[in-house]
Image (tube, rainbow, N blue to C red; front, side):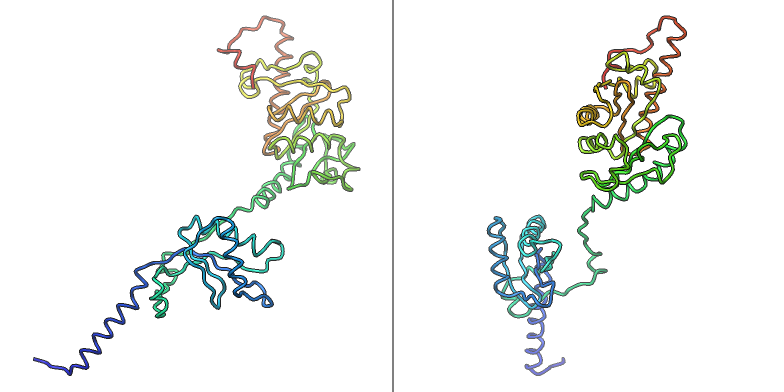
Length: 345
C-alpha cells in the first residue's frame, strides 16, 4: 500500500477546491450588456459618464442588473436581449446626440453572470473563440435609402429601352432617391436620346427645371401621393378619342377587363402642368394604376417603368379593340359572368 505525506494530500485537496471555485463562473453563463467607450483619444470615460448612463436609463424606465466602470468603459448588465437593444438606443442618443459626429462608441456586449464574490476573487469564465461559440452574432440593419437607390439606378436603362423601342407616343420618368429623371421640354417623344433626359430634384427647383417637361409638377405630386417608383405619361390616340365622350373608360375585351376594370377620365380646363391638374391626377392615382386626362393623355404608375408602360399599353390596346368592334356595327354578346364586377378597380 502506497503512503504519501499528509501535506501532499492537503495540497491536492486545496488544488481541487481552487480548481472547482475558478471553474464555477463557466456554469453561470453570460448576461447581455451594453458598453460605452470613448471614440476619440481626447475624451475619457469616467465616473461622470457612468452617472450619465445611469440617469439616462432611469429616465427611460429601463432597469439594469448592475453598472460598472473599468478600463474599457462603462458596462451595463441587463436582463434580456430586448432590454439590451432598448438600452443601446437610449445610450446612443444620450452620448451621441449628433450621429454625424459620434463622441462615444455604444456597443452590445456580454458579461459574466457569476456572483460578485467570484468576480472579486478574479474568478472569470473561460472566453471561447468563435468556433467554440458556434459562430458570431450579427445585428443587421437594412439601409433602405441605399437599397432603393440601387433599385432605381437599374430603371435608367429601362427608361431608354422602353421609350426607344415602343411605337406608342410617351414620355417616361424614373426616380433616383430624391431625384427625378424626366424628358427634356420639346424633345421628340419617339426618338429620345440620352441627352434628352433631365435630372432634377423631387422637392426643390434647381437648374434642371428650366429644361424639364412641363409635366414636372404633376410627376412630383404623384410621387409624393403614391408609392410609385416610376411614371409613364402617354398620348395614346384611341384612348384620347374615347376620353372626349365619357367620364370613365370600361374595356370590353377580356384581358383589359380583368386587368383594368375601368379607367377614370378626369378633366382640367388647362390640362398641362397646372397645380390643379397635379393635385387631381395625384389623388386619382392613389386609387388607380392609370388615369386619363380628357383630351390630353394618360398617366400610369408602377414599381418599374415596364409596369407603368404595361398599364398604358393595355389601355390603348383596349380602346383600339373597342373601336374595331364598333366599326363592325353588330350587337355585342356579353360573355363575362358577373359583369358588374368588371366596372370597379
